[in-house]
Image: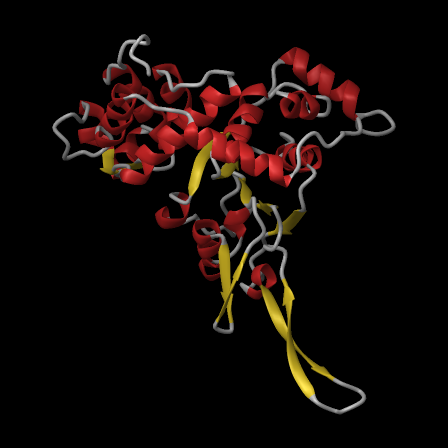
Length: 320
């Protein structure tokens, strides 16, 4: 895909992370990027927006950020000729195609909630008026997992709005040397727009038209249902360490993500490996470990891995 190749000119390594961002966008969903500082999360999102030729805005989330800083505000204007005063709405940064919510967990819950309607409905309501957001619309948020002082953890309701929870790790040695070489010169490599908003929306429609056979649908449902501790198919690890499992939206995300993965791989039907490919970013933030898990160091990541090992996939030849 030309978009992947273009962004790779600037981002060294992190191929899996870039693929997951593109899958989320092709599926029409939002993504949360979790990683320690200095792993180019913001640069990667900026580069994707630049290569897609879409309107890009960035919000630095801070404890003093208020909802109107995101959605916009009304200002009082006076006509100098007539003296008449009227209110005019000044649109906030949410009115963009790609919104980077940088360090989203640093804003208080009231401000985080301002994104809920935008993420779910692709519209915002201000002063009783509902205004649609430009399409396509993506929220790509970043979060630092190690610095928790002065942060407000995202509630499960908002986490569920993110199609993918993408984890970014440290680069390998060769990649890190290449990063040093590429970023300590005069300037970063320029990127050329390879896709616009119309083409992005066409890709989203095409992804939804990718067929998923009955076995694929049943496999996605089986994975989602097995995350619930009261399910007959739950693994021992789930029964012991999970407080709440994933809801039906997880199954939807598995299928949509798998359709996007199949399309980006050049295939026109969903295969079991597509569902397994997206299972980790789809499920890891939708499985809520209990206190016993926290005490014993059992993470949602380990629980998802156990599910993938315990829930058998249909044969790869069972496709449409």
